Amino acid sequence: MSRKSCLALLLIIGIAIALIIPPAFAASTNPCPLEMAMIPGGKFMMGSDNSTYIEELSAQEVTVSSFCIDKHEVSNSQFAEFVKATGYVTVAERPLSKEQFPDLPDEQRLPGSLVFQIAKPGAKYLSWWHWQIGANWQHPFGLESALTHQENYPVVHIAYEDALAYAQWAGKSLPTEAQWEYAARGGLDNATYAWGDQYSEKKANTWQGIFPFFNTKSDGYVGIAPVGSFPSNGYGLYDMTGNVWEWTADWFQPGHNHKSHSVNPTGPTASFDPNKPSETVLHVIKGGSYLCAPNYCSRFRPAARESQAPDTGTTHIGFRLVKNLTIDIDKDEE
Image (cartoon, rainbow, N blue to C red; front, side):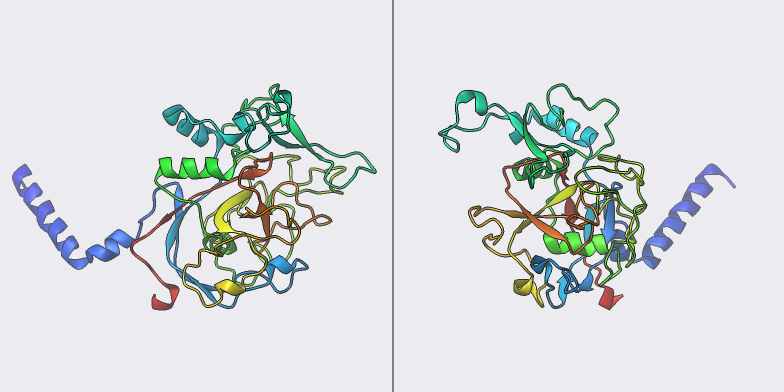
């Protein structure tokens, strides 16, 4: 067969395949970028009625449309690409403003962030958090620390504003709390953990031992782990619980009653946390972190949630992004 005949035959085969496979199906089979996973739309029970935390009380059935989500938390190398391309300066790298902190002397308004330090016996509650001058995403524990060999670790010391700036540059967005929790469950609706109902120190980067005094390192890590170090959930997502907390787009309020029977809920229009009554601007963070222990907080669960001021980053808060789809695949219609 001549070369011309072969090309003609290939053209005929290509046309036949195009006629057999509908364009909409071809487009919807792999609509996400390679670094993201496709989450098929569906319904789930958001929150938990089995928790000791009243802020997790469940919503009746919530519906989420199909979307793409990052397979792992945004890493230091990814954030470095963004900074190199845009020259962006994070909140932790900027001095505290005189308008926001008028009573602070200049030396106390130097750039910095909150850093965790293992506590000594008898330490006061939350005394393990320290304001560290010079701490930021490039220097996680202060100016003398660096990101040597940590390119694949999740970026931290990220304020809400920083995550939004990265999302805009990447052409993505922060997940709603409903999207985040639905994806974290990995198809296991009503399960306690992202992998089932039995806690396992080998399934996520959490704290082993007595927090905040000593960590036995049973899971192999005392601090943050590289992204993808632990098994993925049913949707192929890594570190949806443990490792670092992750920002969501929602304002924080206790419970989920306002989301019941909703489709793609975006949360309340204002924030309130009875545990932090003086703070009026709070976003939801999800997933817990390497500092969560069975004896303290236990928030390494899809239903777990916490409030966080948007202008504050720490050594255990990062983020991942979503990309919403115009083509929706609902589980009930498959």
